[in-house]
Length: 455
Image (cartoon, rainbow, N blue to C red; front, side):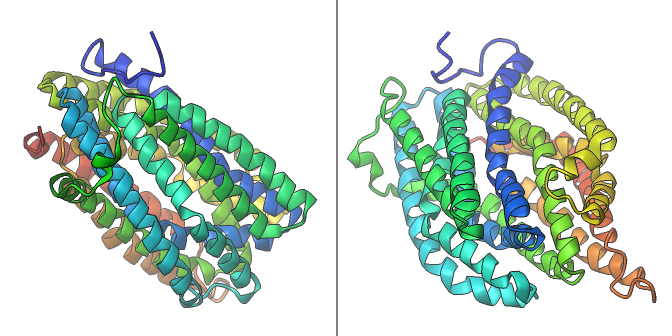
């Protein structure tokens, strides 16, 4: 079997198909998470804790700017998977062409808007003056090269929709290795600080984007790629937007909620900001099985619904979710046993290590519940229902999380803790995750998503 060819997930055992597709994606997601993690480790070790806080504080604003790509990627993966499963070559070709055109337009928009709103947003978030300029410099460079990351995310999503998660993995591993090398060169050797981390990231992302584009141009047996397919196609562009818009809105609202919560985080000072960065970096790795299985479920559901195999979709949803929960349970045990050692990778400051570890332990059990949300939401998205997961995310991440975070912090204010208990920030996250899992399970079992197929 040629592992670099598109994988037909409408055949063989459903769980086997999901696992074979998920494993390279999981490895790839680990590699992608290394982008941010290595950035944090290197600036924390070679520049200092404030630089670590600066890179982390830039995250919510960067995520807000990336919502356009998130929407395009979601619509692309659904349409590509269903057209591939239905063996509709011309529709598949037009969809991929529309994805590339929309990505270029979105990149140009972000390159113009991003630098204009960054400093006002940082000030609005009460970003400490000691790290504000570092945050701004980091984001300015990232926005200059945003098209590289945007194209990689969209094109790798197209490859995964075709069932080829291996090629995307190989290209990402190449880019990750390059990113790590450049981090050391720019920061440790040349002393470029936070700016060096940003330059390393965008150079590596351009490399991965070029490799994905090169791969797609060679897949002539699956679809056609020439100039006529790159021209705007009203029907396919509107369908991409219709399918991707709920996910884009979800990500935008989620990013805005993170910005609101970041303002509360900043009120606790540089030490807690740095602790939050460390926790979120570890969190990024522990979340990877959920995101990987969720993406695999989207492709699996899309291909099988395109082929008219709802029986396989239901079987794969049940067994795939249980497998994901098992992996997450193992990672939760690792966090509980080795937490302090994981935190010590980022810093030698014992107070920071202790604070980070205590916050991480609050979240630990919640990762098992997140698997339910991501896997079953992936099934619904693969069927073409992107609206239901949108509402689940809005209710859990915004309507619940933000009031809980501010409310619990306010309730814990004492003379000893005039700002409140910072641990409540993570307690609110755990509660919102639990509610999200319950809502997802209920709406999946209700079954309205089964009627949303586009082919």
